[in-house]
Image (cartoon, rainbow, N blue to C red; front, side, top):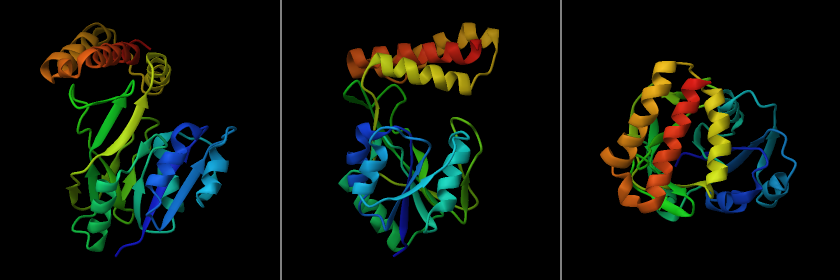
Length: 232
């Protein structure tokens, strides 16, 4: 079986970290790359026996690539500090590592908004490459919305990780305001048109209304994020 390193970026990430690290305890190594936490993040990481590295923050893509390069093992799973690996996904990962058929694997993500998992509005399966052989894959250097590029074949896992995205509207607005600044693409025409289209696509065309009030709120907030991104 291939050995596995789970790598996690942290910065004042104490909120979910105990649960996150417990879910990753099956890995041969758990590597934390921290960018100046002042809360209990490092204390929690030490309790779980993680290997802790520290570094300045250069943006998501470069920081994740640095963490991947620091890992002890070539097979890595990149986990965010508000995501968990539930038992069905853990067993699927271990099965894949017995004899990998691909160089990287997309993993579905079940996003939780305001305490509720949302399966519509284009928010699920929200699959991205998270499990890969670093000899064949690397992150793009984007400051936000970074991606893994694989020089080889890519497969897909069936079981989702869980992402505890936002517990409140305020938290969503704060984070997306920062993300829209990092990914700003000033365009007045798109600032007028794209927010409306974002809402229609998420709420009507992709069934966000099936998630009830939370589906409406999320579609509305994503349309606002789209406006910010093109008006900044």
